[in-house]
Length: 103
Image 1 (tube, rainbow, N blue to C red):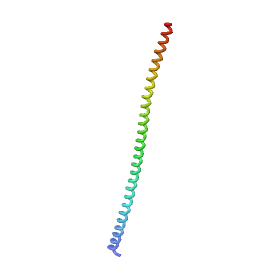
Image 2 (cartoon, rainbow, N blue to C red; image 1 turned 60 degrees about the horizontal axis):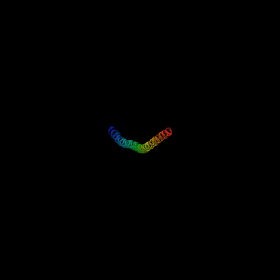
Image 3 (cartoon, helix red, strand yellow; image 1 turned 120 degrees about the vertical axis):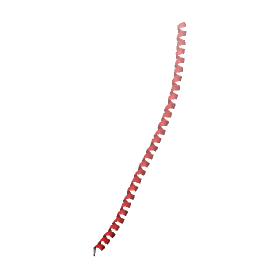
Image 4 (cartoon, one colour; image 1 turned 30 degrees about the horizontal axis):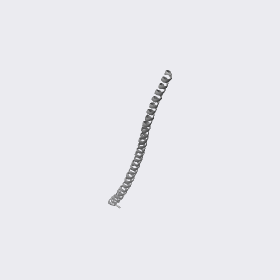
């Protein structure tokens, strides 16, 4: 074998190595991009679940607020009725005291 034949053989091996390296690079790149896409998908899925839970919690708190608001007004009505009853009883007691003192 002469030098030209050695150079030709090395060139063929180099071309085969380049092709193999290209294929290996493409496979690795595909795996990396697939992994990144998978992790992004999982992250988005997790965030959507958290948003859904946050919305449910927000609705639950709003319902609780509405219930407390209703309860507040109901109790205020009860307090007003009790005040009126107290005033009436006080007036009746004062009238009874006046009648006893006059008698």
